[in-house]
Length: 433
Image (cartoon, rainbow, N blue to C red; front, side):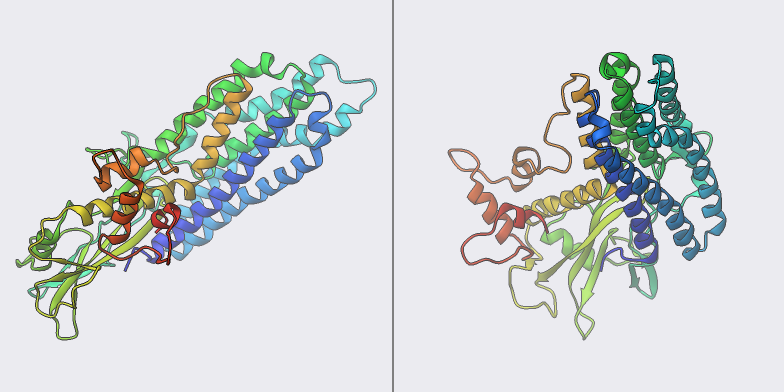
């Protein structure tokens, strides 16, 4: 079980291509930033920068090709055509900046040398490209042009001859008054690429890069990336929900609650919970549940979904007791607390899958150039014991929280889903399930 349907897989494919371009452009920015401003610095690695630039160009085209092909598989050729045409127009904004980057070696060796005015002209080609990709209107698409994540039709339960869909359904952001929704696909890696071109050209031609462009270009770019980063993340688990990385799970549960869900009755499936599918033995007796859970990026459709399988002791046909089972009379909340840790891991998967960890690193790289403080750790991708684990585990001793107690909680709380090792299981192993 798990949302592995065609829509989810194809959207993950598109976001994966987008993430690859984000990662390459971010690496390009890092290299350019490391060598910018030093005499001959950029030129000493210009071949590397140009090769990575060519790779980013190819990856940007790959995004468009993937949108075209994957939307076509979903029967949305017209939507694909509209999106690809709109995004292709953005490529024109990069052409002058690309030319300025490719001509750097010849310009540096020109005789007589470039004048200050000529250098500024080349740099302005890059700032123009960067500014062209900055307006919020370019980071939005018509709601009706997009395909969003859904598990509709994948999880069907029949109650009194009535079939009920217990999936979470379409997960889509809220459109504004103009019918537009935020979209970072293609635009975010294109912006990062434009930023890398600026740092390459300006870093090679202006030894006073920071004093000349720190306040006008570099710091605003860091602010824009921070705003886009935070918008994509949203507020997972917030009430009411905030668009971004969205957690999908049923409500709070224990053994008693699960038993109620399994025994749900009613002509219209009253009592069935989204994400919960009763499991049955060969004789048709319900003996447990499969819980679909995970996280979805509302804007791009990237997802990380999994299944929790738990048997219930006290129902006809129940398997023998074990670490994968809970009693139908149990009010112990610890299995659900462990479930929260597993759920958060899926959100971290999406964060990294979208490429946001590299965006976070790029923001800090830019901030370092202009002398601003870096974004504080932990990142959304990091595991923080205090923030992410101690609360859900709720394990304490008279002297405080014990790491051994937390490890035991994760390993020995249903279901049995952690790697088994003779002597020790690392926290990385315990958390990366």
